[in-house]
Image (tube, rainbow, N blue to C red; front, side):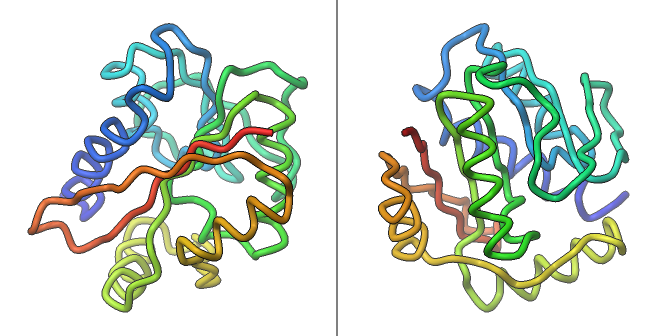
Length: 184
């Protein structure tokens, strides 16, 4: 059993709770950085949405529609092809400049972007590094976490509207997350 097998169902439950009310049943949603596809598949079933995954590598363990990303920031989809884009614990795996480009690209292919990200706590950073290296040794981990204030400063700088939801984790889950809905 992989560590991700333990943490992924908890994350999926937290993400579902964060995104409830932000997505309509039947929405077509792009999961950027979908990884194994486990979270995307769980969200598709629990929120009754249609999910397409994309990532820089294809290592799906769940069967979901998938398209490989050729470059770190360009999404290979038409403008407004989706109702929403999800960025679930993926932005801290990219450089700060790529985070901004991915946010812009996500708003090109959808009207709204849903972000579920790790807060930059010491324990979270250490455990995220260890779990990701076990899960996928090639995973980039540039430690480009942002605090709530830093995310909100980025949104304001780019003239984006946003709503924030507090994510309440169970006491035994060692990570702290933040969730945003972002629009133009």
